[in-house]
Each structure stands twice: as structure tokens, then as C-alpha cells.
Image 1 (cartoon, rainbow, N blue to C red):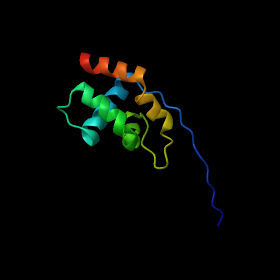
Image 2: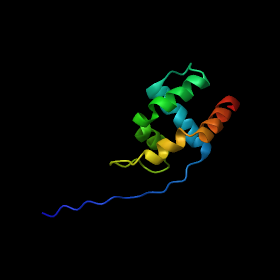
Image 3: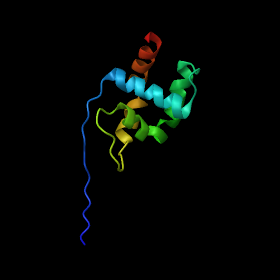
Image 4: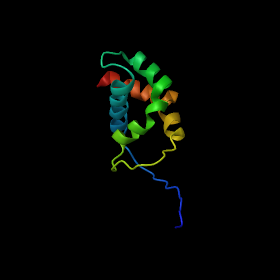
Length: 95
């Protein structure tokens, strides 16, 4: 028996609203509470989203969720970045 191992890279385009709503869903489901204000939500994202990146990808991705390791560093950097969080806050407050 020969075992083969390879890594698959998948580029996915996700609508901003979909990513924001998925992030909010993951926050409310796994991290915080539906009654938390935007500052609590942002603090929770900054402190805990790394633990739930796979869930975020699952809800935001337009593809069927696949099993395997996810390199979440880029996604974590994106959703914890100042510019992204400012846009997320604006989206949340206008929603």
C-alpha cells in the first residue's frame, strides 16, 4: 500500500455581507450572546475567533464544507484587522 499526501489550495470569493453575517452568527453561537453590543462583539472576535475559524469558513463558504486541515492564519488576520473590523462595525450598526 502506498500512501499519498497532498495539500489543496482553494480560493473562494465571498460576498462581504455573507462574511459579516457568518462572523456574527459564529460569534453569537460559539463566543458571545445575541444581546452583546458591538464593542463586546469586536472584543470577542479579537480574543476568540481563532478557535472558531473552521466554523466561520463553514458558514461563509459557498462550497460544501470539506474535511481536512484549514490554514486559518490569513483568514484570522483578515477578520481581526482594524480595517475589516471598522467595516464590520459599520455594517452591524446599519443593519
